[in-house]
Image (cartoon, rainbow, N blue to C red; front, side, top):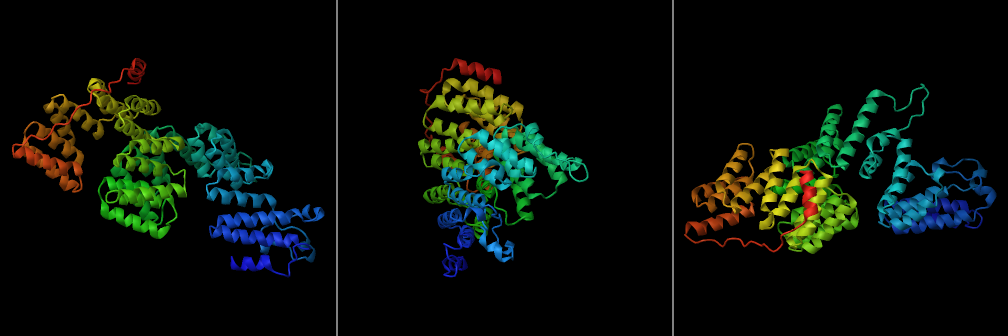
Length: 541
C-alpha cells in the first residue's frame, strides 16, 4: 500500500499527459486499500481513477485494455498511450467496497451502471446478493441463473435460488448444456450430473422445511464424498435446527477434525455446547475461533453464547456486534431474541425474531416468536405464528407441539393442547419435548400416574437431565419424595448446571420439612375463541 502512495504521487507521471498511467496506479492503490479493508479510502481512490479514465483521449480509450495487472502491460512503447483499466471492473470494485460496508443501495447503483452483457460471473453473483437484500427477488433469481449458466458449481447461487423458492428442476435446467470439443455437453457426465442434482434437491428440501428429505439426500452425498466439510456442516446445521443435538455435535466435531480452521456454522456448534452445558469445549471453541479470524459474525455469536450464563449485557453486546458485521446473519437474530427473552424483554425479542423471519424463517424463529408473544400474554399473535409454522412444516412434530404450547397456556385450551401433543408423538414417537409437555398437562389435570408411565417409557432411551427433572417434579407433586430426590440427583449428575434441578431440590427440601411450597397461579384470562383457526387446525391434524 505504501508503494501505491509513491506511485500515485510520482512527479514523473504527469496527470495531464499520462492520465492512463495515473488511472492505473490509482486502481493499484485502491486494490491495496481493499485488501487492507480500508473500504472508504478504496472507494475514493477508485473514483479518482475513473475521473482520470474519463479524460483519456477518445482514440486511446477505444483501444483500452481490460488488464489491471502491471505484469500484463504490453512492452511496446505505444502501449503506454492507452488506458490499462477497465471501467466496468473498477465499478465492480467500488460496489464490492460498498457491499462490505453494508451499503447496499450505492453498491447497486454502481452495479447497474455496468451493461448486462459486460457482467462477469462474479459481478452477477454480487448483483444477485444485492437484489436479494433489496427484496427484488426476480432480479436476484435472474442474476443467480446467469451464474449457473456460466458454471453449475456455484454453491452460493444454488443455495440462494433454493431459499428464493425456485424448484430443483428449474435450477438444474439452467446448468450449461453447450457441447464441448468431444461433442458431449459439459454437464453430461452421469456421475457429476447425479451428485450435483442431488445437492440441488437437498438444498430445495431444506429451504421448503422438508428437513428429513434434505438430511437423507445429504447423507447419500456424504457416501459419495466422505469427510466433505461442506456437507458435514450442512447436515449438522439441519440437525441443530430440528433438535437432533447429539448427532449435530458429532458432525460438527467431524468437520473440525477434517478442517480445524473452519468457522462456518461454528456459532451453531457453540449453541449446542451451551445446551449440553459442555463449558470446557465451548471455552476452547471460542478461543480457537478468535485466533482463526476475529472479524467473522459467527465468532461474536459464539462469544455471546459463552457470556450468556455469566454476563447477559456482555452477551448482548457481542451478538449485536455480530449483526453490525453482517446484518443478514440469521443466527445472530435468533441468539439475540433468546437472550432478550431471558432478560425479560419480550417486546425487543419479537423484533429480533422478526429480523430472522424476514431473512430466512426456520423452526427456531417461529418458536422464538411464539414464546415472546406468550410472555407478552398476546395469545392470538402467538397462535398465529404457531399455525404459520404448522402450515409451513406440516410434517414437523415440533411445529405441532408449538400450537399445543399456545393452547396449553390457558386452562380452556388444554384439551386441544393434548391432541396436538399426542399428534406430535404419533408423528415422531421419540420426540421428548412433546412427551414432557404432555406429561405436564397430565400433572396439571391431576393424572400423575399417566405422567409417570409416559415419562418412564423414555428413560431407557434418553439420558436427559430435563426428563429426570420432570419425573422428579411429578413424584414431588404426588408426595413420593424419595423418588423425586433420586431423579433430581440423576439430573444434576448429567448436567450440574441445570437450574430447574437446583430449584427443584430447594422446593423438595421444603416439602421434606413439611412446608408446602407455593403452587403456581393459573391465568385464565387469555382464552382464545377462533372458530376459523380451529377448523384449519383440525384439517392440518
